[in-house]
Image 1 (cartoon, one colour):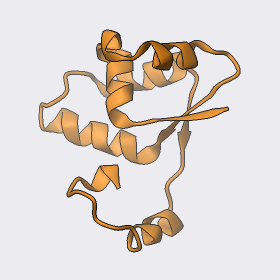
Image 2: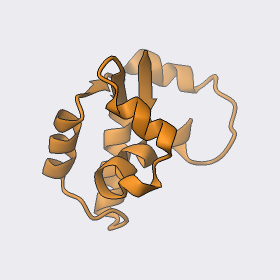
Image 3: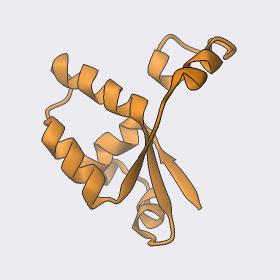
Image 4: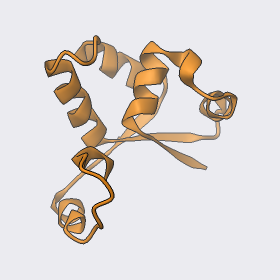
Amino acid sequence: MRVLIDTSTFVWIISRPTRLSREAVRLLKRRDIVRELSTLSLTELAVKIQARKLDVTKEQIRQNIEAARIQVLPYNAAHAYGDFDLPEHHHDPFDR
């Protein structure tokens, strides 16, 4: 099974694990689960750190990705072009 970790969940994993549900913790601990994080989540984390909305470092993020065996998914032009066809549910571009 593959699990896509969104940005908020990743922040909770590294800084507020008590915010994770029991089910999320159970899934993340399973060895047979492939944990994935979008490259765009890394961009969103950088924006939050620069805006001082998040108090972690790039190195802490890198270390936690490695420690949790999270695969970072690529994002390319084909993915970006797909954004043109998505409905606008809200204004946060990272959540599209």
